[in-house]
Image 1: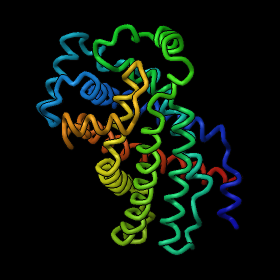
Image 2: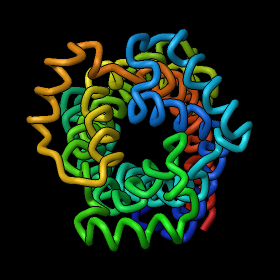
Image 3: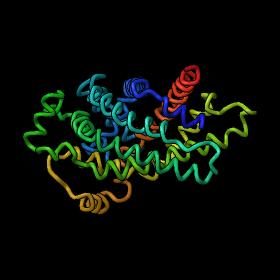
Length: 294
């Protein structure tokens, strides 16, 4: 009962500010990796090498053409997109997470459903921002360099549905990723309680970071091909069938083509997930203490 009352006392304004703080911090640190991933996939400049050599090739190309500023293309849109996405996700898991007295298997099922549903709503709401961000992040895509010009160009040439290009691939990537990541994260966190000697593992930043990063790696390996497809679709100025695009990649690039750009995303998500869960758990603990005092 106390747990339910605590959740009902959560203030949306606090959650929104928390999500905004998380989004700004994560974006400013990790935006260069986002630009590297998008440019690797959209330009095909390093498609024959998807590992560190390919990453260094596209990084050198960006630096030669635009300098350090090139690595921060689309930063404002990334902050806006991440704020919307995190708001739905973190508010959902905060408000609807299952009680601790539920059996572990039931908690896992509910965590999977809650995280997936929360992320689904966030993905649909933030897709227009994601489409604009993708076009702005591609090296050499200078006609989309400014937010207002990017918006007008998409609206004129592609219409309303241009802002939702790649939404199916985004859903197929985001929903399973969030569900898998959150379920694994919670299970790892519960399991780590064995080693924290009675201390709540949520209060141990090192444990939280390890659990968050490990969960992200496993989730990326499963869902990354859909992120690859999303970026390819959103980078185009015309509609492309998801299945047709997948077949083309398989025929021309093989399985490796679906993992083009995976390395910067893997690095990004390992760092991001570790940091995000540390910040989230600390802010959530602070909010719970504040609710208790009230």
